[in-house]
Image (cartoon, rainbow, N blue to C red; front, side):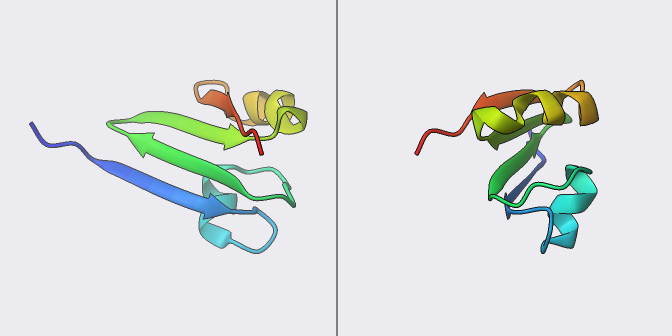
Length: 65
């Protein structure tokens, strides 16, 4: 079985690849992962609603510092 994936870490203001995957302005670093077509975003709780509106099929996980 072959797993295909993508992992990005950064903000969407300075990282074009991240902005392509998470198409909203987020100044703080977030993590984006895609594994076998399923998308995941790890972000602060303040960004969860905005990320869900932009990516309704992604699973949004809480970033705890």
